[in-house]
Length: 106
Image 1: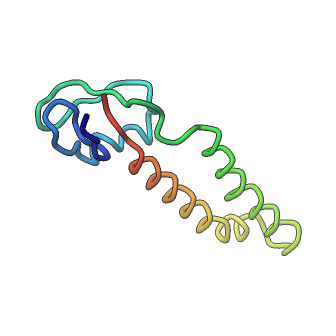
Image 2 (image 1 turned 60 degrees about the vertical axis):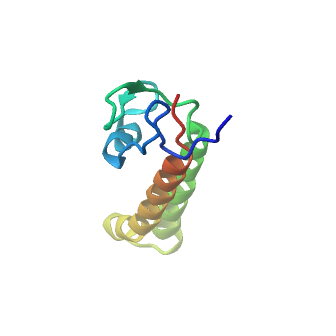
């Protein structure tokens, strides 16, 4: 039994492109995609990152900083939104990295 690499096609053994894997970030993980080398349909073995962790990360990275900047720092809504934006971008980046790192196809 060989250990598969992340994003490796089980048929041809080549790495599936990021373009094909980006679809999972926007549409979800419940549909198959195609390998860009052998053009066969592949599916994920399991969900790369559980949905509940994404919800918790979204709550911690957006709701809490926004409330801090609105109520404690007494900023306007747009200022608080601009200060919260880096937390959101960091959270989305970490979730995308962890998702791509844990993609295994069958």
